[in-house]
Image (cartoon, rainbow, N blue to C red; front, side):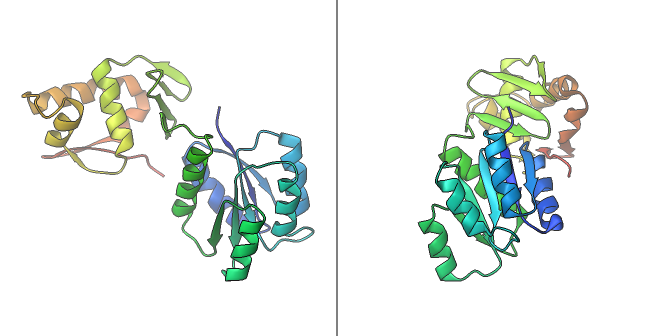
Amino acid sequence: MKNRILVVDDESRMRKLVKDFLVRREFEVLEAGDGEEAVDLFFQEKDIALMILDVMMPKMDGWEVCRTIRKHSHVPIIMLTAKGEERDELLGFELGVDEYISKPFSPKILVARVEAILRRSGGLSADVLSVGGIMLDKTAHYVTVDGERIELSFKEFELLEYFMENQGIALSREKILNNVWNYDYFGEARTIDTHVKKLRSKMGTKGDYIKTIWGMGYKFEVEG
Protein backbone atom coordinates (compact mmCIF):
# COMPACT_ATOMS: atom_id res chain seq x y z
CA MET A 1 0.00 0.00 0.00
CA LYS A 2 1.35 3.41 -0.95
CA ASN A 3 2.12 5.97 1.76
CA ARG A 4 -0.37 8.86 1.64
CA ILE A 5 0.97 12.40 1.85
CA LEU A 6 -1.30 15.41 2.48
CA VAL A 7 0.04 18.53 0.71
CA VAL A 8 -1.49 21.76 2.04
CA ASP A 9 -0.83 25.03 0.21
CA ASP A 10 -3.10 27.77 -1.13
CA GLU A 11 -1.01 28.01 -4.31
CA SER A 12 -2.17 25.35 -6.78
CA ARG A 13 1.11 25.59 -8.74
CA MET A 14 3.09 24.76 -5.61
CA ARG A 15 0.81 21.81 -4.80
CA LYS A 16 1.18 20.46 -8.34
CA LEU A 17 4.97 20.81 -8.27
CA VAL A 18 5.28 18.96 -4.96
CA LYS A 19 2.69 16.35 -5.99
CA ASP A 20 4.46 15.56 -9.27
CA PHE A 21 7.74 14.84 -7.50
CA LEU A 22 6.08 12.74 -4.77
CA VAL A 23 4.06 10.68 -7.27
CA ARG A 24 7.28 9.83 -9.13
CA ARG A 25 8.56 8.32 -5.90
CA GLU A 26 5.45 6.13 -5.60
CA PHE A 27 3.57 8.17 -2.97
CA GLU A 28 -0.17 8.77 -3.05
CA VAL A 29 -0.92 12.50 -2.70
CA LEU A 30 -3.97 14.27 -1.27
CA GLU A 31 -4.30 18.05 -1.64
CA ALA A 32 -5.87 20.85 0.38
CA GLY A 33 -5.99 24.53 -0.60
CA ASP A 34 -6.54 26.00 2.89
CA GLY A 35 -6.21 25.10 6.55
CA GLU A 36 -9.85 24.21 7.18
CA GLU A 37 -9.92 21.83 4.21
CA ALA A 38 -6.66 20.26 5.46
CA VAL A 39 -8.09 19.54 8.93
CA ASP A 40 -11.29 18.11 7.46
CA LEU A 41 -9.33 15.88 5.07
CA PHE A 42 -6.95 14.72 7.77
CA PHE A 43 -9.69 13.50 10.11
CA GLN A 44 -11.75 12.12 7.23
CA GLU A 45 -8.93 10.00 5.75
CA LYS A 46 -7.31 8.72 8.99
CA ASP A 47 -4.39 6.91 7.29
CA ILE A 48 -2.22 9.89 6.24
CA ALA A 49 1.49 9.08 6.72
CA LEU A 50 2.85 12.65 6.58
CA MET A 51 1.72 16.27 6.06
CA ILE A 52 3.47 19.00 4.08
CA LEU A 53 1.99 22.20 5.44
CA ASP A 54 2.34 25.81 4.28
CA VAL A 55 2.34 28.50 7.00
CA MET A 56 0.57 31.37 5.21
CA MET A 57 -2.94 30.25 4.19
CA PRO A 58 -6.48 31.65 4.23
CA LYS A 59 -9.19 30.59 6.74
CA MET A 60 -6.73 28.79 9.04
CA ASP A 61 -2.96 29.23 8.89
CA GLY A 62 -0.40 26.44 9.17
CA TRP A 63 0.30 27.07 12.85
CA GLU A 64 -3.39 26.65 13.74
CA VAL A 65 -3.64 23.52 11.59
CA CYS A 66 -0.58 22.10 13.37
CA ARG A 67 -2.02 22.90 16.84
CA THR A 68 -5.31 21.21 15.91
CA ILE A 69 -3.66 18.08 14.47
CA ARG A 70 -1.21 17.75 17.38
CA LYS A 71 -4.09 17.48 19.89
CA HIS A 72 -5.02 14.18 18.26
CA SER A 73 -2.05 12.86 16.27
CA HIS A 74 1.74 12.60 16.09
CA VAL A 75 1.73 12.35 12.29
CA PRO A 76 5.02 13.72 10.87
CA ILE A 77 4.65 17.34 9.68
CA ILE A 78 6.95 19.28 7.33
CA MET A 79 6.29 23.03 7.52
CA LEU A 80 6.82 25.29 4.48
CA THR A 81 7.37 29.01 4.92
CA ALA A 82 8.47 31.95 2.81
CA LYS A 83 9.82 33.85 5.81
CA GLY A 84 12.73 31.78 7.04
CA GLU A 85 12.81 33.69 10.35
CA GLU A 86 14.30 32.01 13.40
CA ARG A 87 11.30 32.73 15.64
CA ASP A 88 8.99 30.99 13.16
CA GLU A 89 11.28 28.00 13.12
CA LEU A 90 11.35 27.85 16.93
CA LEU A 91 7.55 28.12 17.09
CA GLY A 92 7.30 25.29 14.59
CA PHE A 93 9.46 22.98 16.68
CA GLU A 94 7.54 23.93 19.86
CA LEU A 95 4.35 22.83 18.11
CA GLY A 96 5.90 19.49 17.18
CA VAL A 97 6.92 20.14 13.57
CA ASP A 98 9.36 17.47 12.33
CA GLU A 99 11.05 19.47 9.57
CA TYR A 100 11.06 23.09 8.56
CA ILE A 101 11.77 24.11 4.95
CA SER A 102 11.95 27.70 3.66
CA LYS A 103 10.64 28.67 0.22
CA PRO A 104 11.97 28.62 -2.42
CA PHE A 105 13.18 25.03 -2.05
CA SER A 106 14.28 22.14 -4.25
CA PRO A 107 11.42 19.62 -4.70
CA LYS A 108 14.02 16.83 -4.82
CA ILE A 109 15.34 17.89 -1.40
CA LEU A 110 11.78 18.01 -0.05
CA VAL A 111 11.09 14.47 -1.28
CA ALA A 112 14.38 13.28 0.26
CA ARG A 113 13.28 14.80 3.60
CA VAL A 114 9.88 13.09 3.31
CA GLU A 115 11.53 9.71 2.75
CA ALA A 116 14.03 10.24 5.60
CA ILE A 117 11.25 11.16 8.06
CA LEU A 118 9.11 8.19 7.05
CA ARG A 119 12.08 5.85 7.46
CA ARG A 120 12.72 7.26 10.95
CA SER A 121 9.06 6.95 11.92
CA GLY A 122 8.82 3.43 10.52
CA GLY A 123 6.45 4.47 7.74
CA LEU A 124 8.90 3.58 5.00
CA SER A 125 10.87 0.38 5.19
CA ALA A 126 14.52 0.49 4.13
CA ASP A 127 13.95 -3.11 3.01
CA VAL A 128 11.57 -2.05 0.25
CA LEU A 129 12.77 -0.22 -2.87
CA SER A 130 10.13 1.45 -5.01
CA VAL A 131 10.62 3.51 -8.15
CA GLY A 132 8.94 3.97 -11.52
CA GLY A 133 6.30 1.30 -10.96
CA ILE A 134 8.86 -1.28 -9.78
CA MET A 135 8.71 -2.52 -6.19
CA LEU A 136 11.45 -4.73 -4.78
CA ASP A 137 11.07 -6.29 -1.31
CA LYS A 138 14.48 -7.39 0.00
CA THR A 139 13.08 -9.35 2.95
CA ALA A 140 10.33 -11.26 1.16
CA HIS A 141 12.57 -11.49 -1.92
CA TYR A 142 10.04 -10.62 -4.59
CA VAL A 143 9.55 -7.97 -7.28
CA THR A 144 6.40 -6.46 -8.76
CA VAL A 145 6.14 -4.39 -11.94
CA ASP A 146 3.01 -2.20 -12.03
CA GLY A 147 1.56 -4.43 -9.31
CA GLU A 148 2.22 -7.69 -11.17
CA ARG A 149 4.71 -10.09 -9.60
CA ILE A 150 7.61 -11.21 -11.82
CA GLU A 151 9.81 -14.27 -11.24
CA LEU A 152 13.54 -13.53 -11.09
CA SER A 153 16.51 -15.80 -10.47
CA PHE A 154 18.61 -15.04 -7.39
CA LYS A 155 21.26 -13.19 -9.43
CA GLU A 156 18.67 -11.28 -11.48
CA PHE A 157 17.10 -10.13 -8.21
CA GLU A 158 20.48 -9.00 -6.82
CA LEU A 159 21.29 -7.23 -10.08
CA LEU A 160 17.99 -5.30 -10.08
CA GLU A 161 18.47 -4.42 -6.41
CA TYR A 162 21.96 -3.05 -7.17
CA PHE A 163 20.62 -1.02 -10.10
CA MET A 164 17.74 0.45 -8.06
CA GLU A 165 20.05 1.38 -5.17
CA ASN A 166 22.36 3.18 -7.62
CA GLN A 167 19.73 4.96 -9.65
CA GLY A 168 21.12 7.47 -12.15
CA ILE A 169 24.74 6.35 -11.63
CA ALA A 170 26.84 4.99 -14.49
CA LEU A 171 28.10 1.55 -13.44
CA SER A 172 31.00 -0.19 -15.14
CA ARG A 173 30.79 -3.93 -15.79
CA GLU A 174 33.74 -4.39 -13.42
CA LYS A 175 31.91 -2.54 -10.65
CA ILE A 176 28.76 -4.62 -11.19
CA LEU A 177 30.81 -7.85 -11.13
CA ASN A 178 32.53 -6.79 -7.89
CA ASN A 179 29.30 -5.85 -6.13
CA VAL A 180 26.81 -8.43 -7.41
CA TRP A 181 29.07 -11.40 -8.10
CA ASN A 182 31.65 -10.39 -5.45
CA TYR A 183 35.23 -9.30 -6.06
CA ASP A 184 36.59 -12.86 -6.14
CA TYR A 185 34.42 -13.85 -9.11
CA PHE A 186 36.64 -14.38 -12.14
CA GLY A 187 33.89 -14.25 -14.70
CA GLU A 188 33.55 -12.29 -17.90
CA ALA A 189 31.60 -9.20 -18.75
CA ARG A 190 29.36 -11.34 -20.97
CA THR A 191 27.93 -12.86 -17.76
CA ILE A 192 26.50 -9.44 -16.87
CA ASP A 193 25.23 -8.79 -20.40
CA THR A 194 23.37 -12.11 -20.40
CA HIS A 195 21.73 -11.40 -17.02
CA VAL A 196 20.80 -7.85 -18.05
CA LYS A 197 19.19 -9.15 -21.24
CA LYS A 198 17.08 -11.66 -19.28
CA LEU A 199 16.20 -9.08 -16.63
CA ARG A 200 15.08 -6.52 -19.22
CA SER A 201 12.91 -9.14 -20.89
CA LYS A 202 11.14 -10.05 -17.63
CA MET A 203 10.58 -6.36 -16.76
CA GLY A 204 8.66 -5.69 -19.99
CA THR A 205 8.55 -1.99 -20.95
CA LYS A 206 10.25 -1.14 -17.63
CA GLY A 207 13.32 -2.93 -18.97
CA ASP A 208 14.06 0.33 -20.80
CA TYR A 209 15.08 1.81 -17.43
CA ILE A 210 18.33 -0.17 -17.75
CA LYS A 211 20.36 1.90 -20.21
CA THR A 212 23.44 0.55 -21.96
CA ILE A 213 26.52 2.76 -21.78
CA TRP A 214 28.55 1.56 -24.73
CA GLY A 215 32.09 0.51 -23.91
CA MET A 216 31.48 0.86 -20.18
CA GLY A 217 28.44 -0.76 -18.60
CA TYR A 218 24.90 0.23 -17.57
CA LYS A 219 22.81 2.88 -15.84
CA PHE A 220 19.39 2.45 -14.23
CA GLU A 221 17.43 5.60 -14.98
CA VAL A 222 13.71 6.35 -14.66
CA GLU A 223 12.45 9.05 -17.02
CA GLY A 224 10.50 12.04 -15.81
